[in-house]
Length: 307
Image (tube, rainbow, N blue to C red):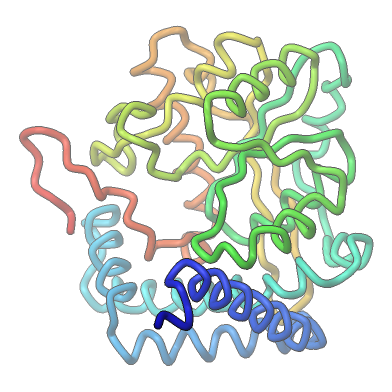
């Protein structure tokens, strides 16, 4: 006799795991920002010493993107990067559990705010490009608190967390849009209506949704969606990130114009400009970029694999 069907067991396991993660997040959210960052950096240092897969990916990414650096410099930057990734991870419970206004209170400075003064809702769409740099959750909260904004949303690997994530990410009024065809069409409609859309431009897209373009001089599959949104709606592309300030002092929101070539109708030129925009932001805080992400997981014909 079968006491537990596999599907029931998996659903129950997902439910329990999701509940446990939420409890842990609520406990961690009781930490101050500074203490959360210190704990995260400690965990990042431990992860670096354990020398696991993320450490090896970080090293390979840094060697590929900064060939001029000595090996000891790669090690130093890699360790700093993993420490900052740890800080990002421990900031997540704060960004998801603290009230929105309290999170926004962590913003000490806004650089490039004048670029937003040209935007008038309903006249011309605004495409926000937020790479995996600094704290992108806070970037989303900041813009959603000012504008009616939509952002792409992919269901988590842990199904028991889906409702929780949807709730916390939409609590500031942000509309979460699925990554299917219907969702993509919704983004086009929002921008044509003069709305605001947020996208992570440095995620590896599905095979049909990207083309190779240079990223730190290496061909990397780059999403074509951002360029298509700009070309077909006339939206203004801006690139933005939340720069982590030292000693738990908070964050600086940085807003930059995307490289001019991104508005080109030539997709090759547009994608190159998109990646250049991301590169320039990374250059301002390279240790706060998520270098453990396999940005070069697909290899262009005739090129040597990075991993």
